[in-house]
Length: 170
Image 1 (tube, rainbow, N blue to C red):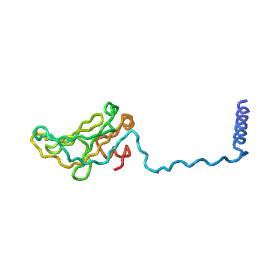
Image 2 (cartoon, rainbow, N blue to C red; image 1 turned 90 degrees about the vertical axis):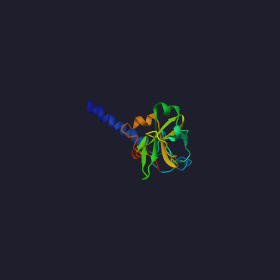
Image 3 (cartoon, helix red, strand yellow; image 1 turned 135 degrees about the horizontal axis):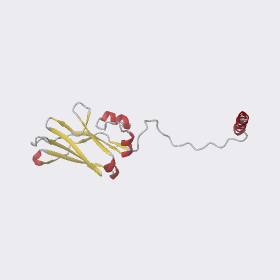
Image 4 (cartoon, helix red, strand yellow; image 1 turned 45 degrees about the vertical axis):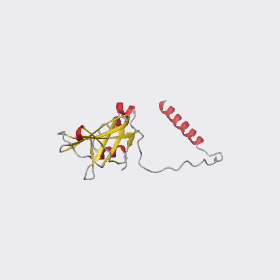
């Protein structure tokens, strides 16, 4: 009995598919061509990666032992402040990128951020006066909470890993 029902179902399915695939009408008009696109790496709408930016304007505090620059960062929303990540990298003399905070000798680089801004600091860990940092190059990567959660094994302090995981372009 089961074999008869199965055979009947297969025959009926084959007949329906054959009938529905027959060509018995005229071809409709060709539709409009869509907009041209590019064949690039898939991006991520939840990540804002900045191009390298160079800062040369600093303000001195604490008798010259602390230097600060403030940057506008429209991509930092309240949602990013509450649950996302902002990573800032400094270009070191060898041309590579190092995550901040970064300390070498008595010189320490660090940052903070809020809605719409990033502050970058350079200080001397022994609180002695230091020279104006001059021209320095940085990158900032702003990452939403959903992207952070989707990449739980990412070392957010390794620029090359962040760049690879988030498909950032230099």
